[in-house]
Length: 117
Image 1 (tube, one colour):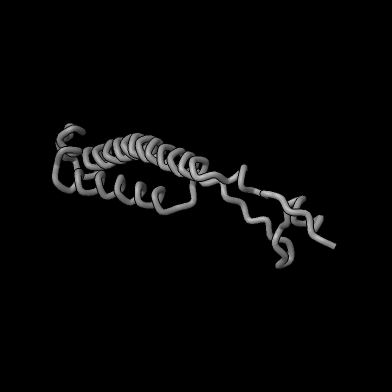
Image 2 (tube, rainbow, N blue to C red):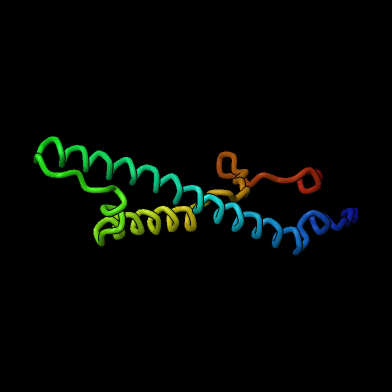
C-alpha cells in the first residue's frame, strides 16, 4: 500500500521564521545586556558607598566623593569588567531561545503526522 505523501513541516518552518526567531533572540539579548549593565551600575554604586563608609569609620580618613572613586582607574576596571562579564554570559547562554528538547526516555518526540505513518 502506498504511503500518503504530504508536505509536512514545510509550511511551519520557513526561512523567514527562523530569521525572525534569531532576530528576536538577539534583540532580547541586547536589551538584557543593557538592563544588566544598569543593575550592575546600581550594585557597584552601593559597593562604592560601603567602601567609603568603611574607609571613614574604620580608617578615620576623609570621605572621598563617590564619583571620584567611580572615575578612578580601579573603579572603571571593576565596573567595565563586570559589564563585559555579564554581557558575555548573556550572549553565550541560551537565554531567550525558544528551542525545546522533546526527548522522552531517549526517544525523539514525533509530530502527529510522523506518528500516524
